[in-house]
Image (cartoon, rainbow, N blue to C red):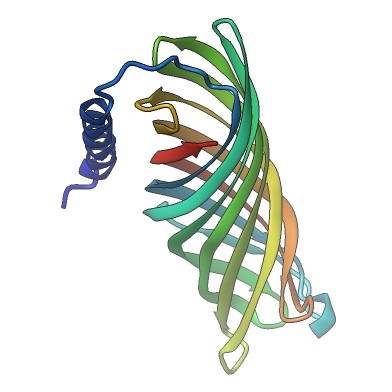
Length: 237
């Protein structure tokens, strides 16, 4: 499947959801965005991980590791809940979500550690999940709501590090919570008094909180930049 077709498939899926919603909405109703809601979402995600590993002070070795790697992409799914207030055309509210991802990237590692000389290896990085707490605000026109969103983000990253050049391969593993921010926007449509569907774009930056492999033997500062395009459906109470 071509790389660029995945976001198109997601948008196409949302279009189908909206078409079903329009077919269901045979009776007219008054659009009201105020109140709590809960829903599900799924979509395409792409991330870029950056790592800078510090010295191996616990092993009496000084030096640094420079790690670089390609962007990774995959599918994510999650849940969201929030509350909206409406004042005329203005709609504003707060939303929290949790998303699970399957994103993995392999990074080439190169280093110079005296007295071992050149050290090479591989760093495998995974983004396991993210959660955000965001404000939303925008304008409602008919049954559509166009909004911007932004707030706090937290993600769990994990990885494994394999180094060669010490006479025998050395491996480490670990995980950490990374904190940061998120911004984006979307469009949501109400196709019945209790059901809405949306398409949303989010851009997230997590890090650079240090996280360690195996009890700080290899202290690592890491950051992740994540882009998601997703579709969702909500039930409004």
